[in-house]
Image (cartoon, rainbow, N blue to C red; front, top):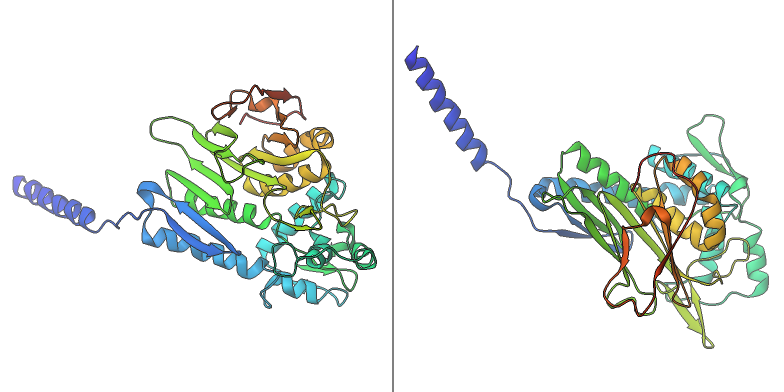
Length: 359
C-alpha cells in the first residue's frame, strides 16, 4: 500500500509540473483594427494568445455582419433589399434591430437606425463631408422612420418597407460588440479586463485589491488633454457622445456627427457631451446618442423607461457648452472632477427610478 501511495504521489507531482510547464504565456494588452477603429483589450493575468484570438475573431465576425461598407454584410443585404421583400438575418442582427427599435420608440425617434440616408448625405468623417442642399435633405428625411421597418411573417427575416430606406448601426454596434466580448470573458472565467472599443469603455470583473475601476470623461473644451471628470465604479460600461468627436467646418460653422433624425441636421442644443454609465454597453452606446438628441430634461423623464427596458440601473452625466456639469443622483460618490474644478460643482439631479440594484 505504501508503494502505491508513493507512486501516486510521484504521478501527481509529474502531472502538476507538466500542467505548469504547459500553461499558456500571458500576453500584454492587445490592439486590433475593427469597425474603422482601434480596439484595445487588456485581459491582465488571463490574457493568452488563444483567448485574445477568440475575442478578436468575434469582433471581426460582428463587423462582417454590421458593416454598411462590406457588400455581403447583413446590413448591406437589408439595405439593398429595401422595398423588395424580406432578408434573412442572423441572431446578432435580430438582437440589435430589436433593441434599436425599442430605444427609438421610447426616445420618440431621437435614436433611429434608419437615419442612414442623412448620414450618407453629410459624409462626416469621410473625405467628402459637406452641407447638403435643402432639397436633398428633404428627400432623405422622407426615408427615415423606425416605424416603417418590421419583421417578415417567418420571424427570422427583416423587411424595410420603402425603397430608398437604409439602416446604420454606427450608434450601437460598438456597444453590442463590447457586451459580446463580456460574454466571452464570463464563459472563460476571466477575472478582470478592460475593453476599449474606440472610446466605448467596459471595465469587467473586479480588481484583486478591492478598489474600484476609474474611467475618465473627456473635457469637451480640450478633448485630447486631461479628462474633466472621473467615474469610479465596479464592473461598468462608460460611453460618451460629444460634439468634439467627429466634425467638419464650413464657412466658420462647425458641423458634428450627431444628427437629429427629425431635421436632418446636427443637433443644436446646450450640450457638449452626454456620458452614459451602466453595466450593459449596448444600452450605454445607444443611449449616449439618444440622450444627446433628446437633451437633458427629456432624457431624465425617459430614464426610468430605459432602465426597465435594459433591466439595469443607468447613470447619466451631462456637460453643457457653458461648462455646467449635471449628473443623475445615483452617481453621487461615483463621479468627481479630476484636479482643479475651477470653482465648478457637479449638480446631482433626479432621474427615473431604477428597477434594481445600484451602480
